[in-house]
Image 1: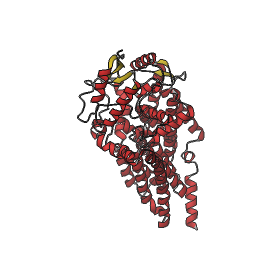
Image 2: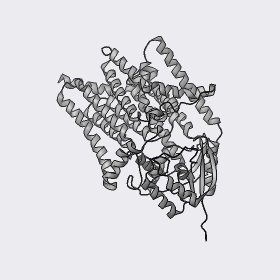
Image 3: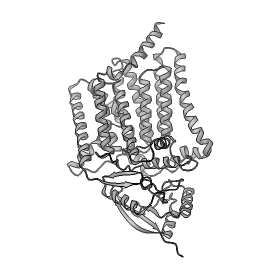
Image 4: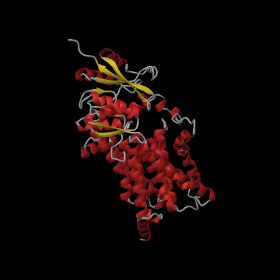
Length: 529
């Protein structure tokens, strides 16, 4: 009976407002959430409320979400490299609010606020006082702002951290089961991240089995964690296996990446390649977030594990368990992107590392006090500078089919304006999802683009050519082959390029600074009588 009472008191203590126990008042939390909201709003909207254009890999998921709204079935009707969570999430949002430009940026604000709250909630369990707000602030200013492209990586990390936060609140059967559900959601958003996080949390539960003192309790915990995970993952993927076929789903999710996701972008060689050139004070200022992310991920975990080992007899056992869970999940997230550690991917798995870093800096030593002061100052300066720059920088506004949209890149603005003036909604178009999304143009379901390596399969090229011939698409976007280098031996794009050259003529060239290469717009030749 005393053991049961201790268990109940432990759970009650763990679930009784850790934010307040950390010394952070409800008022301080609300103020910090409001400041985070303002910062996030200015990253996605003008002061007037006009949303900024979203151009990045997130457009691919947004475009597929539109296809889902029109009745397409993932894997059967179009190719998808990852599990279906992100496509379904965006499709659900579009179903609720419609396909509007403001909805896209509102998703970014909502995601940032959710991640800020979860990071702060986890921080309250490992540090005390005002330091509770530091990980969330560092995440917003140095991490999310450097990789503001809401793809499956970000959403999977959020689901993983929610699972961590749930399990840190107590290890009763209900909480363990919910942790399993959120691990399943992480897997349905990114199969590699979710599976590795699930494995890390399973290792944690086995490592922490001594806290119960009973084998039956350990088995019950493991069952409560594994069964919901398996049921959710199997249920969702089973639906797509039924609709698309096991061989199709298996090829897309398991076979494709190791066989065809090639090149330096998806190789360990990409590490540090995105570090910006520094040729002046302005470049040095902009490079600070890169220095921070590259310095913290993953090296802080080794320092943190050493500190846990060194203080293994002194640290409170509850905090020690929380930190061990955070280290295991953080390392699992890093392992999920280690095969292609581009800066963007490092940012998406950085939140656990930021939490561990702040914990390491929370000591009473004078040097740690200085480090914390530098971090707070740098975060505040960057937040103010970024916000003021956004308010004062040049911008152009266009009335597009999915809503009024703002641009801060003149070259990008010119491209969208030209296409908006020369196309009508639902006109056939191919090879750039951002343009088709914002201009409400129709595109083939099977694939969004054709590129110059093995990523685009021969059957996809054949399907696109049949679609172009059937729909007589007026415009196609192309990249000059010379500026992107010679096509690799794995490229299947030759029939597509040949078809474009035989049936289209070059009508516009848009020099886009963000890509480093001009973008060509080809228009279909008039049919001969």
